[in-house]
Image 1: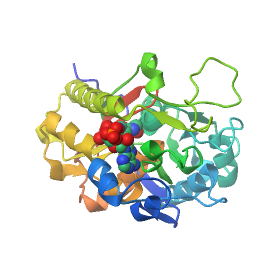
Image 2: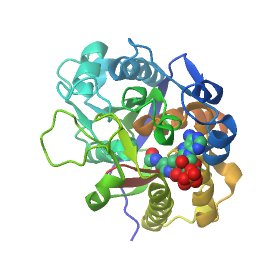
Image 3: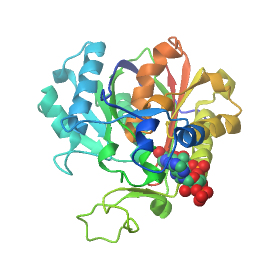
Image 4: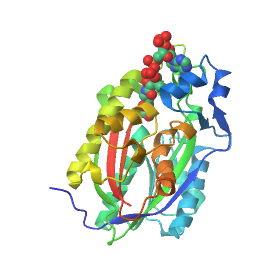
Length: 331
Ligand code: UT7
């Protein structure tokens, strides 16, 4: 049976922040043994944004959030919940959500981070939906913000060419007249954690550390294996969501997937047999911004894909954990 939410919700505002500093593939040729030809043909990435010292995850998240609040025509004081998805918070605690909340002036509003790597933002939307659906919240701010340039080893060509910095935010508002999230699917497989991880160098725990000579606090990834798992997990999750919603893929106007690699997106749409031109892509401009990919794509896809009220939009993400999540939205 398709699941029917008790009360609907609507995206009433979106916002993004992207650092102005552009790092091109040609710039990377000067740092590591790589080429524009290799990076573009293997990933689809041409350039990515790199944050300055003052463009922290908190700061970028605040800029995106303010834009989303303005578009939603609400004040920070109207928020009932602030969720922040990030793997690069400025501090373990206070959370990025508390720091962003303070900058916005949302004193008293519950705020917490949730961490599901590149799936974090869709996880956040699913968590928010539970509060909006039951009436426990009327306005929820969800932010995805990442400063991945601080956690890549710039000597490692296997990873440093892939990631970028940025932030995106949305305001979700309870709305009886709009169904909002028609269905979702989410999951995790911690048994494959070592395929993609960022070790906490202060931890004395058992987490696998990056192999020498990589820096102890950088992203480590088994690229080929992650590629395969990403395609399969995202396709399976998308199909489960559609089945729960009782919606055919042919009725989906646009797919917005996590932006890690154009070849992953191509393999996903091939597997789903979905028209490539109805799949939103911005990986060429920003690279992989982990939890910030989906909200930045949501912000850009509206005008670029000419989305109309009522269009069905399928979000699908995959990341470290391993984690995956998908959600079918009614625009
Ligand atoms: O957000 C979710 C997490 N991330 C992902 O979803 C990323 C998933 N993985 C991928 O996107 C791809 O696996 C990569 C882009 C990371 C790598 O592409 P690939 O086609 O799987 O290449 P590969 O790792 O098999 O490497 C092929 C060759 C290797 O050389 P040999 O061993 O064949 O001589 C690499 O050393 O390419 C070499 N290589 C590079 N060469 C030039 C690896 N990185 C680079 C580079 N420039 N930057």
